[in-house]
Length: 163
Image (cartoon, rainbow, N blue to C red; front, side, top):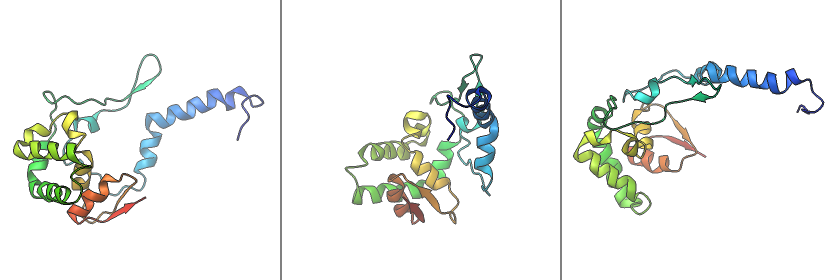
């Protein structure tokens, strides 16, 4: 560990800021993608298309909001194609964990009645773990620390590595 008081300024603040800048401008993404063999975006998520933007003040910004009226993703079509899996998840949750997943059950019931209701962050983000599990290739192992995946993957009969 470098002691900032004794170290040369170029090796501390300026150097570290430059390294962080390089990571933000693509280094982290390249490093993350090194061992990825398949990248899916079956929902054609609008947010996945937006790059990281450096603002004039030097800070970086990532688009993180999604409006139901303006979004152009294919989430409704994707969920409709997976309607039978959504029903499996819904039934499993009702039988095994209804109290813990009440809000998710309400979203699922609303979406399976009208798939267009899935658009927008208020619903989509609540269904996020389900969307990820459905979008993951069937032969892939899902690794997570998120406890919600355990219920979802069990309902789908998917293999899960959970910590």
